Image (cartoon, rainbow, N blue to C red):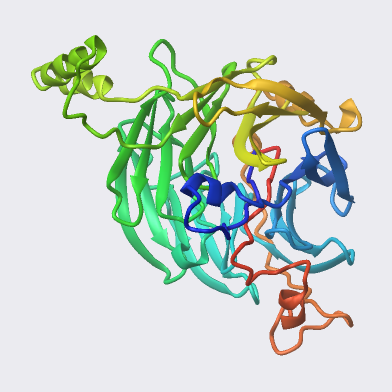
Length: 435
């Protein structure tokens, strides 16, 4: 599953705070849901209203559904043809092109410049305008879960993916200039989740243990923050997501709790008259004499806010957004519902559930049943190796069905109001997939 929030850049006076500027005048969040009958696109105009703006039935059993910002362009992959990617114009009901690969497609990521297709041991980088294949990153470390992240900022078009199968390394790749930037030693164990901030200047990651979440600066890879999700048990982190202003980070897992962390550096106080301040100095001084693992734990921050889900054990994904000028936490669960919680930006604490929306019209459409039958494994974990080697097919795009001047998506489509690819206030929408 994948969840992304559409956000607008600020347009406020300098007297407003950074958080107010980032959250001001956000467009309505949208949601793409892949299901057995195809896919659906929803728009959240308010907490109480979630409208279905499109229902696509071009392909059954959709396992990957990615929308290009708030445009009419959709990228879908079906379980029935998992080696083929279809790009469609859903408002016109036409297929722009389709590409086939040598093995199953595990994930698709896109921004204004690039479209990235992730296979288990390869990455293919396409130019988003004409779908020309720019780079094939072959023989990558085995990546059975299709783990990767692409920055939505076209000025910092970075791609992150596992850099090692035996250690928690992350390879940072410049998808704009098609060069490898660095390898970040993020964790001791395998990486389980990665996510970029909206600006592409920060990268969050979690390991398979799920106890520690780290945030790194991009492109240098220096560690900025370290948070401890828990100590008692290992969990499987299913999603990481920054807020629009990159001041908060939410993390969801296979447990009943979603954690929200505040990304701020604590300024040392010159005076600490309180007992807690005094003890903080004592612990800080004592940590230098303790083993590194214990010392690290003493310096790790805890969650600023949290949510206790009513359906624990179900895979879920989360994101932070602004709806009706109030900060919200959105949680999409494999139980077939979208949960909306209020978030107190000042005091944090437990988030209050304010609304629940149904994602599927019937139980037959809900992919949860098939996921449970497969032992709770994701799509990427359950796909089998494809023995066929299909060749790439390309239908092209224009009103008469042909390709003009080598363009798959003509200029008039990029200039169309519904697409607005050059709009600096455009951000990718929510994307909810059964992966």
